[in-house]
Image (cartoon, rainbow, N blue to C red; front, side):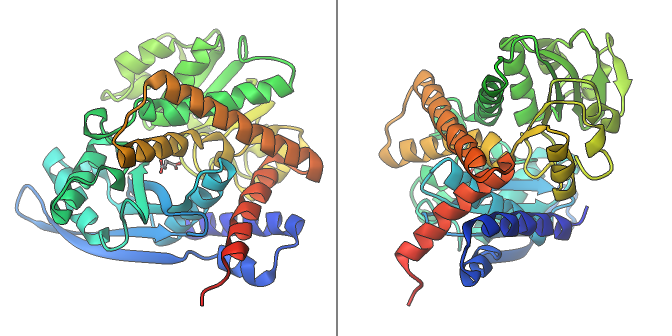
Length: 416
Ligand code: GLU
């Protein structure tokens, strides 16, 4: 998929929100573009001695509210435009959660399945070195995203530290606990998705208990969201991973899928007591709650009118196109948008960064409690704005995000 379309979608969302805000045209033009976009091409010596050249990016969208923050994605389809859209969404996400950050995103065009561990480490260390000129614990702080994890963050932190001559734990978040990572960070995005789902269910006068839930994607976000939803008494009837999708109207066992099938060769589709379905069929299953937690633009004009859920909670970034938003809004489906629903990851990244800067670490219970409180407050802010402006939830979240960022820009003034 072309990143051009993803960026167009992010810009359409921004334009839509600015209409409600009567935003100055010049300010709108500032927010529609990234402050800084670095493209790097760098060589890696592969295990067989060949030299491969990889293309990567680090895009910083806005710094009005603080240093920039956002993940690094390793995926064969990334480009600078998609990375820019993802950086822009990070700006709004941080502002909606009221974190003192602007948005950024990084990516490398690579299929990590084709790399050995050694090659992955070398690629990460060289990419970290290439973007070292723009990242830093006070300027731009990366984190994991699709295709990266705590080990990749450990290599990233070590590389920056070697070049600084001392350990710089605050330069990335999502690190292993023993290297200055935070308790609760791995589960944070999925946990936040479930807090958002619970808040939405309160609005419907119910709870998660007994709700039929379908989850697209069984990576870090989807798997944790599914496990926690099950803990809350929900019945997970459909899930998918990169290898396939499965369905059982009576419910699927999340613990078993997570521990015995996920991440193994055949993936969750190896599980027997279920019907094998396609990714398209999964999204259109009868259910109460749909959690898209894979990649962008999965719900579009071609399938939006077939979505049967009453509530969609976006674990992925940008899973719903603008056309699909309009169709689902007309059908009365409540869509809790990515910049609110999946903010749990960056919220606990913020906690990790604060702990690293202070060299003082908190317990998991305290972290989960603080995460829940911030998610609930952000949800309630967006819910109030949605009612006040009589709009959908995405527009309401954008109104809050864009307003907070533009107020900061106006207060600071345009330099010089
Ligand atoms: N990659 C995650 C996201 O899209 C987390 C970013 C972070 O923790 O900085 O929200």
